[in-house]
Length: 79
Image 1: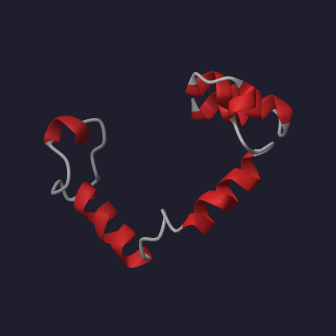
Image 2: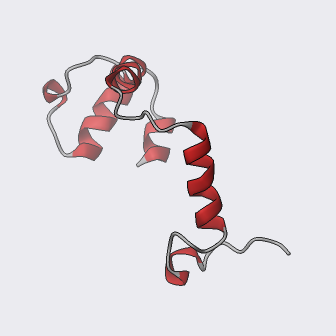
């Protein structure tokens, strides 16, 4: 899905791809472009974790503490 969005041109084409991937009508999307959508999302406070918390989460994933081996088997950290 992310690759399809990346391949689509900015503006209407990208929003049409986003709507299609989400399984909604284009008119159901309130904003006309993805950038204002991201800006609205970040302004909402839903993505408000401090960077150190994000770093701890990534470290826990890499160290095998956050996910089961089945979910991390595809990625091996070089020793």
